[in-house]
Length: 176
Image: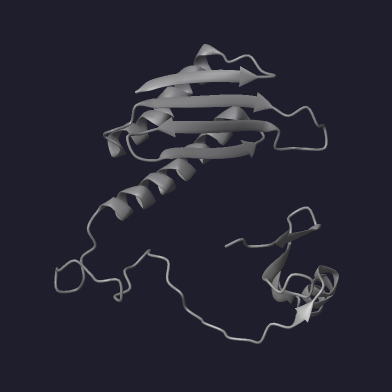
């Protein structure tokens, strides 16, 4: 594994570099095709943020590129949390590559739910009403959901308004 540790607004000490190598080498055992790991450590300068020690990792494999970001009160804790998140991603990646086996030992069809696989648990049908995006935002607030599907009165297309993490609203206008 080739590990590159960079610092942004922080000097990377040898002890932090060794700690990161020790923790990230756990992933090497799980990913045989692991080629390169880039770890960037940073300190956020905003005094109102208590979790200001940030660790971001990018892992290049022969398959997907894995990325994760964690922040905490110190870099070692951030690295620990980052490695846990990356281990979950690696586990998910490996399970997708492995042939799935059903109860009889055969590879399952798409109709057989496999533990850990995303599955639709509810389906809903409803009539979409033509309205403006502003009206759709009002409806979104009334129903109390994170998104609202509607027919755009101007274009006739089906659109989605959604609540963003920053409290603002977004509009999705699909193109065919």
